[in-house]
Length: 265
Image 1 (cartoon, rainbow, N blue to C red):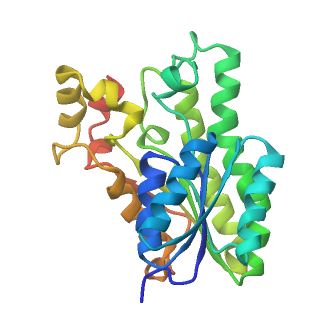
Image 2: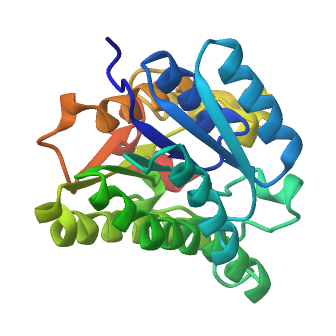
C-alpha cells in the first residue's frame, strides 16, 4: 500500500519543477492527482508523465489568482470524488523576471504593478484555493493543506521584498487555518524551501560565483532538489503527519540559520 492510496490531491503549479516532482511521487504512493499550471501545454505533458508512471491524473490550465479558474480547477477534483489534499505549490520568484516580466526589486524600486501581481499569485491564489477547497476537504472528513512559503518568509532579503511579504503572510495564514479548521479535521502546514535547483533559479546557479555563494549559505553545502521538497510534502500529506498542524517545515539544508549570509544575497 502507498502512503496516499486513494487520496485525491490538487497540486497547483505542477506543470514543472517542485510541483511536477510532487505529482510523480504522490502518484507512486497511490494518490489521484489533479495537475494545474498556467499553460495547457505543461499541464498536458505533466498529466501524461504521471499516467506513464501508472498513476491517475487529470489537469486544468488556469490562473490561481482568478476565482473562476480556481473553482473550475477544484471542480475537476470534485469530479474525481472530492478533495483530500491541497498542495498550494504555485508561486513566482526569481523566475518571474524571465517568465512573466515581473521585477523582483526592493520595496523602493518595486512597481505597484509588480507588487500586485506577486501578491495575486503567491498569496491571493492560496487564499482562493483554500476558500473553495476547505469545505471540500471537510466534506471528505478532513485532510491536509500544504502551503509553499520560503525561508525568506522568516529571514530578511535585500531584494524581492514583495516576494518575502507573501511568503511571510503564508506562514501566518497557515497557522490561522490550522487553528480555525483543525476541529473539523483539516491540517495545515507550510514548507519553507531554501535554495532549490529548479528552472526558477537555474540561470543564477549557472554562474559559478553565485552558485558558490548560495550553496555555501547552507551547512550541508548543497542546493536542494525538487524531490527534496516533494518528499517533505508527501510526509505532510500522509497519515504519518496526522498529528502535525500549523507548522513551518523548513527544508533548506540549514541555510536559514545563517541569517547574515541569506540577507546579503
